[in-house]
Image (cartoon, rainbow, N blue to C red):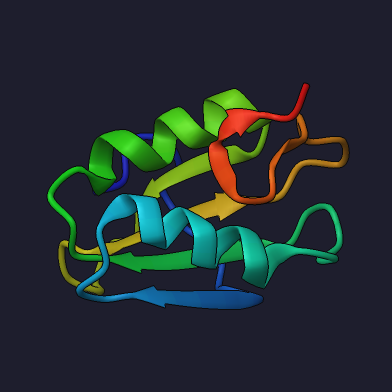
Length: 99
């Protein structure tokens, strides 16, 4: 069960990062959510073993809301909700703040 949210909302966007390392996954995620409305629910399929740590950390850094693993979809699907005013990150390195 998802400890952060008992019922994970259906996705508005699904980002398939199957087989990608988190560095590449974050680049794809950043590209695919660019221009999406605040409140958009994003499901991320991530097979990199670091994803359960990296996705919540990235959400914490940017201000997006990490909703946790998506129950009923296997161990590799995670959900987040886009913030109204996320912290900007570098286009070429979304794991760094844009200063």
